Length: 206
Image (cartoon, rainbow, N blue to C red; front, side, top):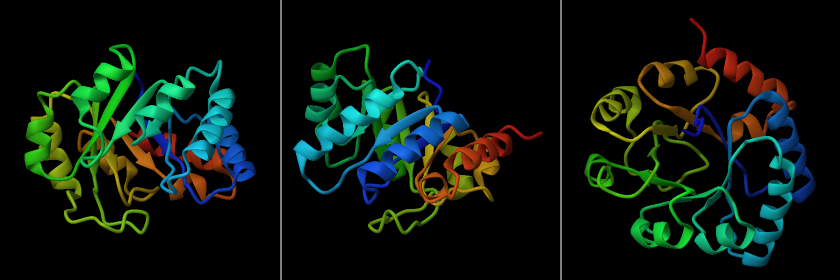
């Protein structure tokens, strides 16, 4: 069972050196999963960045998840793929990547959550818990009450996404999330390593 608890989603605006710095620091700080997110559409560059991140995660046991692009995940033999509602259908993605890879799906409302329970995915990204500047097209915010309700209804682990930081990460875990996905709180920290250590302590605080 993968550890979804401290789930880093990379910021596509980082240059390669910044990306390497963030990944190395996040690994040192105790991140448990890394999703490489690239929205600019340059597949060659996406593959190049994925190869770099994969090399940094080698021997750490931390899975590399590719956002949206099954072809890139296959090209670099990543540990998994995370799909959105408008990406490749999950049944086809599962056929392509095989049964031993991690497959995640974003769900943005209660109907999608219900539909996803019967799909061949390993976890769901519950998006967005709070509105956030990194996701400008949010139509629905679950809030903590929505997260708690969803966790009670889902047979699949839920990773909470959107607007999460030091101030609310504990509340998200208490509401039933298997993990929290973070961009800014790690990528934009002066010391991503210190940020990860602090976030881990907060998540597991009594």
